[in-house]
Length: 318
Image (cartoon, rainbow, N blue to C red):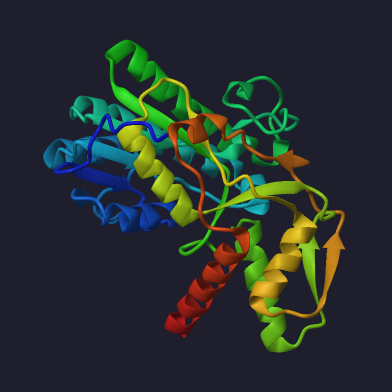
């Protein structure tokens, strides 16, 4: 049974913050199926790190619904080497948008968390109430702290001002629009880029960070976008809510799946001296599934799609 719509998007002005990113662009694609007016703004016009610019633009534009998909993001290497940037940028982006939305009278706002908000050794699958129950994973604690602040800020604005601000907590994402730069990418795009390069150059092996043993859950970004629109219309509570696929694999299993999608037939070399991150990250999807939403894109389908997009983007760049 699917939860009823409590906030229809029909006829609404809907602002997607971060519309050029992987999540934001997927949201724009998904919202094009709704009878709403999608609003975006380029970073060159409004830098979301600048409070006055954000406030002025929201006051002038007056969106009724806001998706906060804007963030500074990256994988283990980026998190570990740019801690100040990950903490500062994400704190100011979310606080500027949430406060400006309140001042501009936004009817509903949805903020995105990250699976790194949960403790490094959280119970598996990770329920929403595992938040702040233990130490964070050190390699991405800066990003996690910023995201936790955003979740709590939405809850605080709901408690103090009565704002209908909600938060969704997605698992590890991948898909079209991802970052394939090895200095900043997450594991799926990094593996795709490495294996594609190895395939076209004839390299016999690919290096993979860590031992290959950590287990991760992956969600295609188009599934996430569908879940976020679902939640915007049907969810209104102070607690964040998990969004996941339930499809969990080890990094070694993921590498084999990416190799099949890319057509790489070589060997894998595991760099065990590189950090693994948390040993396991699987979110508890019970609350979202009780509302009536489930992921529909399998990991293999999603990897094929991500690789097609990567090749098309490389062709366009060339």
